[in-house]
Length: 178
Image 1 (cartoon, one colour):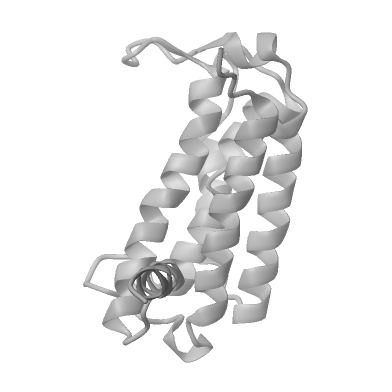
Image 2: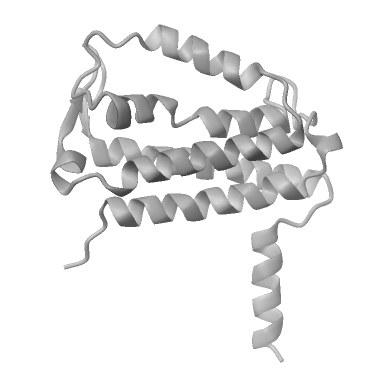
């Protein structure tokens, strides 16, 4: 039987964050204000968004261990997260924020038990589905980051930067064709 638990989830998340950090370091700071289209986040805002995206999950699972949203002040959390996203930062501060939030989240999930990951969290009335396993909720953080990393890789192309994963694939292809 193949098992994918907390340790594997944490390592997989660390790999995703490592690749996000490569992009954050490769995009020159003068392009952090770049916006791909009207109404979208700037590069800096995307990185800040990625950094704080695990805040809800961290609070629910890592800090409070809640099994429902009952009594949880979601509005206050969202307000706080949006303010954090909007805070201006230098490139170095942005990279440091990505490193810190990534390690905090990976360390949080690394030691979770199989029983904890299998337990369900009840959503507010009317939500569909009405509950999810913690594993699914925790996995969604990685999926969310990969979604935004795809946007950042397209932005790199728009800025004339070949994404590092593409460069690595092209190098492996060249080596195979020798």
